[in-house]
Image 1: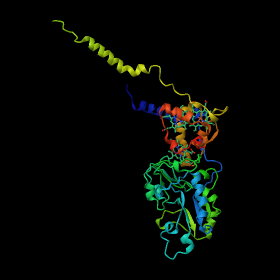
Image 2 (image 1 turned 120 degrees about the vertical axis):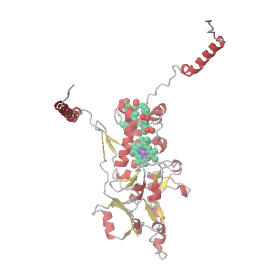
Image 3 (image 1 turned 135 degrees about the horizontal axis):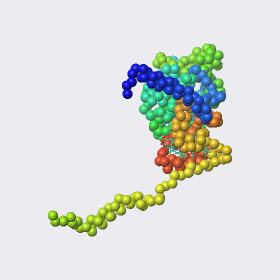
Image 4 (image 1 turned 60 degrees about the horizontal axis):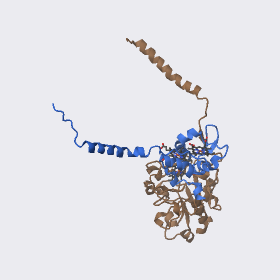
Length: 258
Length: 135
């Protein structure tokens, strides 16, 4: 068949028209079943950057901190190992000289020297753990929380090496036998994954503040750093606060009034 | 040309061949009519109550439940969205233990039975808890 320039252009034109018609037909045809969708819960607490202030003036001894640690371990199925090398920590106590090694000196006042400091994941502004994770199992959420997706964790432990605060623990053993009472509403972890504090992401989703804050009797103040009217911003405005290892530039979101 | 197409030890060869054929086909006729029937997933517990409906249609669930669960975990953990609105507008919390197993309360008789037959062993239960086992 002879096909000149004109007939080629005609066919090309018709084909282009056909392509344009398809989306129209699809729209007309998709009348019946609605597509399933997903959404946030109605009561969800949202923020630009969640943060926490620890008011150590309201803390006298370990007994004041224990309820906060206990409730976290309980609801998140954090196991208790006798062997310190297998320890799993989400929120724990640290001496001043270990929590703030660069601010420690030999003439520290007695209160601070012996005071237990509450430590947890700092949910950093520039988290080193997120940068090193090869599977993006650790990522930063829109609300500033540095979260782990356990479904992607391959247990390489780069994040543990990267974190300057020791906020991450590795499951050297199956944790289940070491959980006193399993909370079936929240998954446990398994041998071979890393874990850490999730700032109670599962509670924020249903309108509840983190459990440690709830039982802290006002020693912990939780809120959005981006909201200048918030209680946490008011607290930061009117009190001198320090953060752990600030020179590293990670930008921790946990502040301490000493 | 003389016809010397003679088979030596004819009797032994044929008997040997017979035994060989019988042995090689043994697994087939031994199992004849014994193929394990596919288990009918039993609906017990809350899912069996009248008026209960799955997240999506039965046929869809049968074929796509693993995909749904995969989407769920991605959406919950990474997008912070926990509510699923199905194709008929009904809402569910996207949770393996708190939704699927809240209805399919007998995991062993439902999920496991079918998975054993299909020879799949989801590793989800290393972390996710069957509420029934912990009560």
